[in-house]
Amino acid sequence: MNDIFFLIVNENLTSGSTAWFSVRPDNVSQQLTLPVAEWTNQSEHQAVFIVSRAVPAAIHVFITMWQAAVAWRVHLRQLPRLVFLSWAWFWLLLPTLNPWYWIWAMPLLPFAHL
Image (cartoon, rainbow, N blue to C red):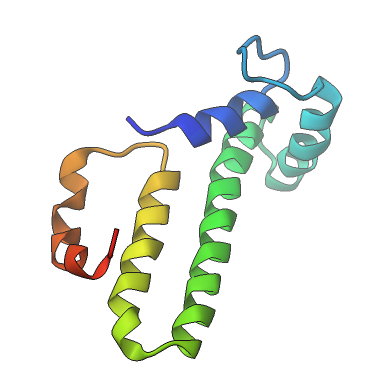
């Protein structure tokens, strides 16, 4: 399981959360989730889940766009490294991750320069 980022976002959006890392007031989470609940015609609990999934997705889209801009400016030899880093961020932001999910990425490891 690799749900630390998802868990932090989810617990901070859940009303009445008692997690030690929940640092926002309830009115802030309701301001974010109630419009989504009304727009999607879902319960507030489902809206929290939707927003908790949308935040990491938006972060990944931003990172991928940034990587694409970098790839546009640098030499094409850097492209496999940038693809690997984009996928690494994608997997890091997922709520579930098992080690064997990375088997397909092994051909890109020599280009990662980690």
